[in-house]
Structure formats: C-alpha cells, structure tokens
Image (cartoon, rainbow, N blue to C red; front, top):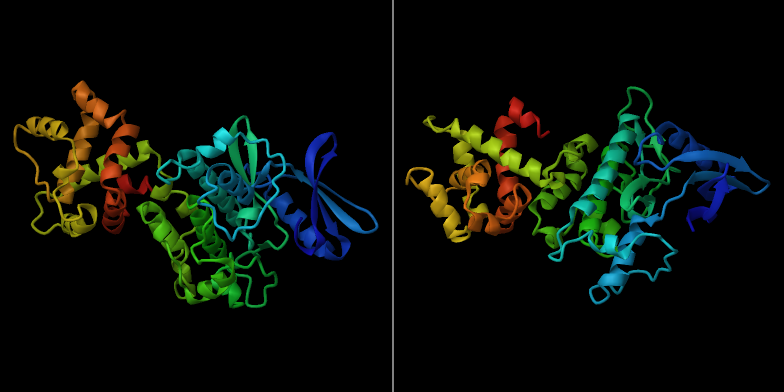
Length: 416
C-alpha cells in the first residue's frame, strides 16, 4: 500500500515477473513524472528498473522491477527474528510477505557488538551509489526513506534499488535548486529542514535524508531525531542524538556532516564524496591509508615546527584516553617491534608513534613470529580489527589531520 490510493501488486509484463504499481488516474501527472525520471535513470544497478506503462478507465499501471522487500521491511524482519526483546515498542506491527531472503543472510548484517558488517555497509554504499547517479543526471529524489529503498536478493547477495520517484524533480540545465515554490512534500520525519521550511530545494536535501537513513540502518531502526511524533520539530531545531553510534567514530563523523542545518547547507558533503568516506572503507583501504599517512608523517621529522605532528598530538586525549598505547597492545608485539628498531623503542604517549608502530606491523607482518600472528589475526583484516577495537577513534583522527593538511597531495587524493 502506498500514498494517495497507490497499491503495489505482483504481476507479469512481457513474460517477466514485475511489480505493478497501480496509481489512481487523477494522479496521472505524478505517474508520468515518475516514469520520465525512471526512464532517465534506470540504467543504473542501484535504481529500480522501469519496463512499461498502461492505462484503463480508472488507473495507471507501471510495470517495474520486482524486489524482495524494502529496507524498512528488512530491518523489521531482523528485529522480529533476532531482537524481539530489544525491539522498540512503538514500531508498527507488520505483516511481511514472503521476502525470499535467508534469515542467515539477514542475521549477519550486524556484528554481535552492534557494528555494521561489510554486507550492511555494502547496502549503504549501494544507496549512496544510486544517489550519485541521480544527482549526476540532475535528479533530486526528494523522498529518500527506508520504505523507498528496495532490496533485491541476487544470487544470495543483497542489492539496493532506489524507488518511488513520484515527487523526484530534475533540475533544469545550469540550475542548482528548484526554487522556493517547488511542490512535493516528501515524508514526515525524513525531510530536510529546508523542506520543512519551504526553502530552496537542492541535492543537499537528499543528503540530509541519507544521514537519517544511514543512522537508521546502523542502529537497527532508530532515528537520530527521536520518536515519530517529535522528529519534524527536532529537525527544524537541529536537535539530534547520535549517542547510539558513538562507538563508531566514522559513522558519527559522516552523519554529523550530513545532518548540518540550513545555515551550513553548502557544507553537507556531495553524494560522490560520501561514497569515499572512511565509513565505507574495507580493511585493505584502511590499513593502506594508515601506512601512507605514516610515511607522510615521517617526512615531517626534520621540521622545527611541523603542523602535522602538532595536530596529531592534539588528538592524544581522544585516541589514547589518558594512558600509553602500550597498555592496550600485546607485549610480544611491542618487544618484536622494538627489536627491529635496534632497541630504539617508542614513545607510548604519542599518536604519531602508534601510527608508526601500526605501519611497521603491517609492513613486516610476514616476519612476525607465529604466536603474534595468531594474536593479530590475518593481514589486513585481522590487524585492522585488532587496532581498531583498541583505538576506535584512531583512524578518523588521523584522517582529519591529513585531510586538513594534505588534501592537495597526490597520495591523499587517492582516498577522496
């Protein structure tokens, strides 16, 4: 069931299994706008495909790619199957159709500690990738929310499809916004403050909604602006709570940027920038960045007043939390690293020295004794997990320093 009397059916079109979107004929303009936008954008793997349109006396029928469920449904399935005790009592009771997605696959979307798994992060990247495509075409979705993000199970691998383009609008050439009189209201609780205030509508409004969706996914159905009845008011006031993701600094950093108020509208990142954010980096990219950052920092050793070195050490209270980093690192590993520095040792109270120790661990992993490799796990995944679990803020703090000081340098631009 959709808004304005819209109903989605299962059906066939030219022998193909499809979803049939039946729209009341008085909303013909919405249907035509949706098909125009889909025709323009549906060549992308993360936008739902459109196959055809037919009419009868009362309705318009759109034949579209049939998916298994929505992102909203997927999280409700997870809560119903695995987190009954922790489920929010206020969430709506849902009857989920046969979604044909293995519960084993749904279960591994989150790790036991609550962190998003690579599978869930891949789905979030799919959403961003779809937005990148729409924005490159000048299309603003204007109604991004979990119900409008569809999930397709392809060969035991989940894929996201952005859908419901009924109120999407395409910017005219050389235009950056739709103007103050743009119609289309979006959905309560997911609209950007400029939408609620009937201001100028730009691609940045999708980025705000994206921030809410990312938070919703990582937290298994929570919202940064609170309960449904208070969300729009809190959005207008700019009052959000990210405490549920504070254990994932990369998520806090990205979501905070996406939820910036109207006064800092231009500071919200573009979809193409979000796609490269450290939240979506795999272990190989994370460790590669730390090694290159360390190599760059070493170049600062001879400088009398290095801004980079000074900036890194101002992060010590956040990264080290008041104690030397040797307190959290395996003693056998430290001894081995010290030996390979000819007994020179490390300063355990410096962030830069931790960065160098991680670099040396990665560069000489194959030379490490077996007992130390067992402690660390494989490289790069195990090594990344080992240090990230002990110093969760480390990667983002190093990234911020390098972003501020090395953004124009070739080595760093590979991570943008």
